[in-house]
Length: 269
Image (tube, rainbow, N blue to C red; front, side, top):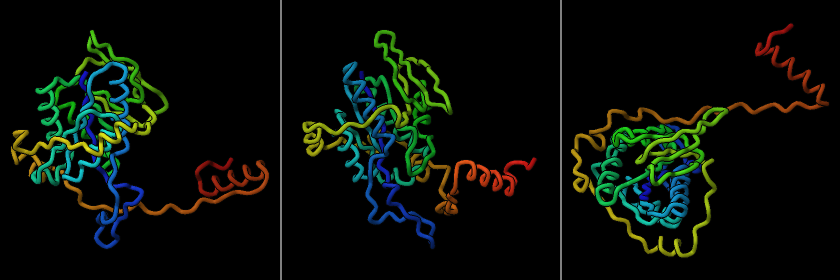
């Protein structure tokens, strides 16, 4: 089995601020991390490798400093890592990004057939959840989104059964391989890196593929290949502080009902 995981380097949103004058993200001094959902996708792939055997390859589109998230993935137990990096990729939206990652996966597929692609359900800096499904659509492979559990893989029949997380329920579905999954955090608990993997990650150097290596047309990548653009970034308005009710449960319930009636959230009977 060959598992491929798409990962992204993102700014740590706990540290991100928005410049109130320019309405742009202040990135200076903000640490970069592996997209949290992608970390769970790597963990899921490594667990599958431990059960069914095979190999985990991690692939990332980004600038040279994105090598750090690939080394992080190696410390999680991935075997190989590819960085798709080229100045022409800069400014790519989800459409162009999915194209670049797809071409990277297809190049890997020609080297060693890929059985399963895993992605985080979304990146925390964009929250679009479009890249994973975009890759699946370009590959023409089945896509199983919001996966919270991988129930089984049938290597002979080339099928997979997963549980999808829906609102208030779960859906159990199957698909034929090769396929693409997007996963949620519920799928696993991240483990600490083992010492051998940690040491290997320190010495690891990923392969780097450029636009020319992927045979991509400049008109379809970067800003030229991106029909969407971010017009404005702004922080959400601060919510008013909540009010704590005091008294006995009966007194608090009576006061709460009075407030709901006053604000016309419920009718006064």
